[in-house]
Image: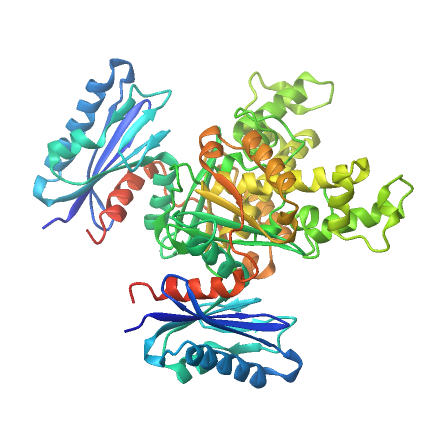
Length: 317
Length: 317
């Protein structure tokens, strides 16, 4: 009986792999360094060894494994199972699905981090029990994924939900992507840190000067302590994040919006501000029906998401 | 054999009804005045009579009809088949599906105008042969619908794709919905007309003064004739429409964006400007892959859309 799946969270520094039952209960787990500098084949072999290890550690057999799910940084082609290119991994137009499929004789599904996180939250996190989930991750960048009618939505070229590059401030700061006023340029952790550093470089009075290095964490801390410059920076960033989320509500009419990533860890101030903007900018019926909540999965979100990908994609198969 | 469907386009002034084969070929058609002021039952009876008439005129029998599709202004509950309320029709929390289902013994599907138009374009218009279609209608207001993976997307409370109320100008004009800077407030025909009227009321020099009444049509005309004030108004409106559409591209990664409604009739200038904004603001791969095209269905779009709704919803049933 196929009662297990394997999830692989492939990252630039480590590979986390878990054997799980079909309810997302982890049976065995292993984490090894990626050693990306060693190149494609050694990293592929470490993935294969990790899968073998969790199956063995879980006293399972290959026959009992229904599917393998892999979450990886993109860009990638989920349909073909190919990692196109990613800065922190050695893979270049590399088909990661074929060798694993050959080795283990089960379906293998590959998807990008943001989609995998969205699926994980939908199945086992803050979106459990709902049908329409939009997931925002707000950290160094802003990304996301959407589960609509119980299925991950990928779009025509597999690039859907580039929500970090929604324009929210047409005359705002320039984004790394080249565009002006993306929500990633107004509201990511990087953007908040940059505004803090700009404040220090300017002549305004701010308590940020006491830090040797300013990240978004220090800006949040000093805003909470009452520094008016930091308060403005945070207000501004969260207001634009709120606009992006309000737009997602007007577009998707989702049951739940889940916010994860480093910036979401700042807690109440993030969720209060976003909620206010949504209440102000969306139709009442949609604003009232949508829940806006923090991500439910913790440090294992990546590997649990990969487990969820394997379960979701192999359903009814 | 069930080889036909019936489509009903229910409007405030007229009811258009067609019998069609399963390829969208119209066999027979009738249009009658709605006479909304006569109340719920007389209007319902006119719908029933119209359906009977097109079946009879097409020499078909009830047994040969697979399904009936109805497009109506909203808000409505598509799942329950209930028109909740609409300014130009007498129906108030009225179940329109039940009496038709009872009378004709076939499945009856109700959906709002914008969704029906999106389905019509997807099946028989500019979206034919694609999988992911986002439809914008830009006229008095701005609305839309999306067919994703071949299915209409409705969202949690049936209000998805309120794309007219996407915020694109956070410090822009106030919208009728109460929000600031919705694309409906910057780029609808009403918004363009309003900017023209404001120009006349101000002291600026503009060729608009020669008109007794200024609608978006006159502003487009004078912009094309070289009036700099009108050119600015049109540039500004289409730039914001472009931002809304660029956001839809980043979010949905669709195969095609279809623009219909009165404003789209201004033609090249609309599509050129929107295309430029999308190329500037979206990831290259998505901008290059998405087609941005005018609606393909003409004056019969409403009834053809209702036919398409009946065909799409009764598929595999």
